[in-house]
Image (cartoon, rainbow, N blue to C red; front, top):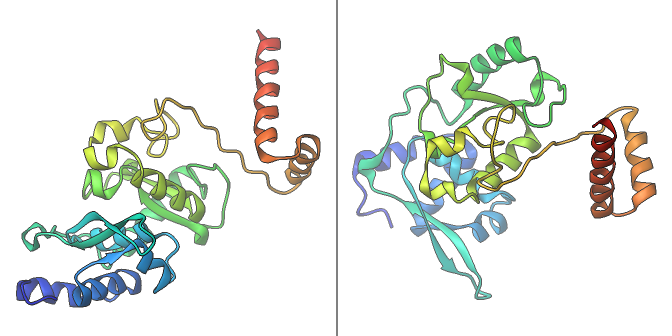
Length: 241
């Protein structure tokens, strides 16, 4: 399936050693494309777009399109783009690893070992460095300016990736839209993935779990808990006024 690809492009593809992007690349080389369904069923990747993102972050062009699976559902598929569109990755080695150690220490020194989204204090080993503006939209960003990056827990990073990839700006690629989004700048934002929303993530830890259990006992379902919390906040704000 790779007979039409330039030799230097194939050499670049075969030079990738990190497991997840290598898996994607080798499958496409053999079959011409890979689908979300295959990424899940064949390779166990429960968040397929993240595996594709790993490949793109190596500067390798990937095109997303739609195919129909065996049940008639429309699902995402991926194939190589124009080899001439390979991006320089001189500041990256096998994805994010070249960024992580240096930037993590600088970010921790300035902000503490804390997830920017959930604001929970974590062991340094549990934090990941992420571009505030997705690489697919903002491209390579100045690693000497740490304001371009953020610290995220694994769950926050997955949530951000999924939300960004399903945002209308994912195809428009307007950097200014990202700059005003909660997922890029939770400390100062106007919208949540292009939706007119405000979001306050709350994590219960330690003795606070008792409060969570009390809320659950009082309201029952998660939906009722959310409604109850909104009512409590509204009543409190009204009383303060």
